[in-house]
Length: 156
Image (tube, one colour):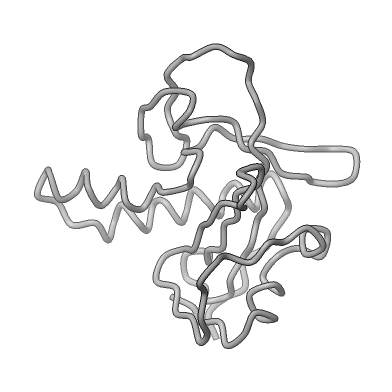
């Protein structure tokens, strides 16, 4: 869990290269408490924003993804983070810039509503969601660390 006192704090959670293209989520009020992660889609639908913290950390990490077209095929895919299986309109390639010359991508739920899907699956099977959500945050951080070189800051 982490907290934002102002829009400036929220913006600071993103990499400097991403801050210049940010669009704040609508209807957000401060202070803002975030339990697992915060995700929203830009009004144009072109970008998806994610803020989360690494397991064992309370420092927020922000990533801006672009929705990339994978052609006109309508195939089913599996989200790398929550393992939701859906059509290409639901599960698609999201990319982010590593540098001005390099981008990386991952197949994810197009709206990053992985938490809701994991909670729903756990509720239907009678399991507790805590472990699944911890694994989700671990997968998010693994991507941020391995693909973008983002380091986790331990909880203070």
